[in-house]
Length: 167
Image (cartoon, rainbow, N blue to C red; front, side, top):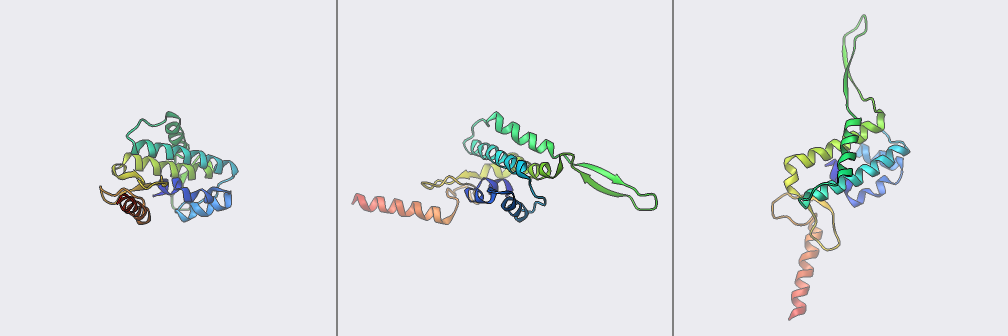
């Protein structure tokens, strides 16, 4: 899921410059390269989404500034249907995004977060319970507490070691 992938700590390196960010966006199905200002806006949007997702996992009120940022980015990327009908041709529909390419990409990211936060996956949104890991993830089962088998294994090994030390 795009919003979760953006908030993953491993994405930090992919947001280091516009070239890397462009590769990351294309790998997630988004066409378009961001300019320097667009990359800065993407990082700001990432922080807003991260705080909203964490508020959702804690059943806490969302930070108003994060909510405003998310909604503003989504609204700026509104797409309008346009019609092109040449005199001797067939009418064709196309989408116009008045905000430009950066707004289009940021809007797609914002809409991904909106769909996650307002959809049924919100109930399965979790923060990893392993010590030292605070990744967000969607739990495949209601009992899942860890983002990966590696984190679950670390917790089980630590629990076993603690029991062994008590003997």
